[in-house]
Image 1 (cartoon, rainbow, N blue to C red):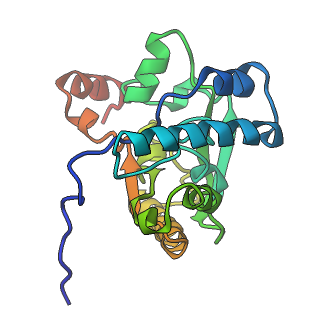
Image 2 (cartoon, one colour):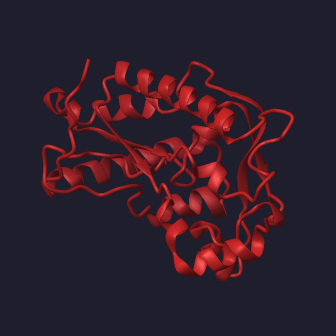
Length: 227
């Protein structure tokens, strides 16, 4: 059985990923280190404002600006079984030419946190994003629920960032094929949960595949990954 491919959205353009976070939300999260409970009313206020702004500007795809996320990649990966969030991760585990790593290092900052595979990857069966979808459904008319948009980090995000041997333990996965087979299953579960919650617009944010074809990065790969 074949299925039609829907290559074009039903509107001309949309933004991808985070919108600019208001300063009061940044200060509360990073300077004042407020708890999740303390952050929620501030996130609600920011989301209410940005949804109103998108609506007034005629945006078809409505998002929450990713204001409940500390970074655009959100909470999907850290909440998978077999993945562990690490604060102040070892720099030597990263590919220095990966775009986000290069941006950190060039500005004099090392990555503050990252997520590493420590066991077999599996979805828990509970999405950390359903509440975000439900909140947005309360801000737009029911006939526009299909316009609600959410992004997921690309499936290769925590593979591309790491040097060979750091993306997953060799005693857990024999190779990339096994690793990505479990990653695919986890994404399938997540997408099914979100679909059942009424979400119809999911985008993969920052797949970072184009950087592999940069001539300068080809030189760096040769230098960093002998063989």
